[in-house]
Length: 91
Image (spheres, rainbow, N blue to C red):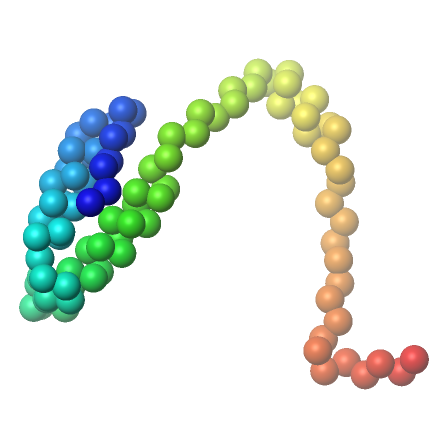
């Protein structure tokens, strides 16, 4: 079972842990909700992906001046054209 330790949102972490415990106790592939067709496999997939995205990565905070300087030094975007896969190669 995944251990959701979400210090930025303890309520979400606790709810995910309860859902993971519920899902783990179910037989593999069992239908959880007949109306929607939701299965144990669906819940497990959702929990795995949620766990993978909950890694805490602090974001860099920039001042307005730092952001402007970074934007000014960024390379300009040049549009690229892509040949059609059906285009003839005439040499």
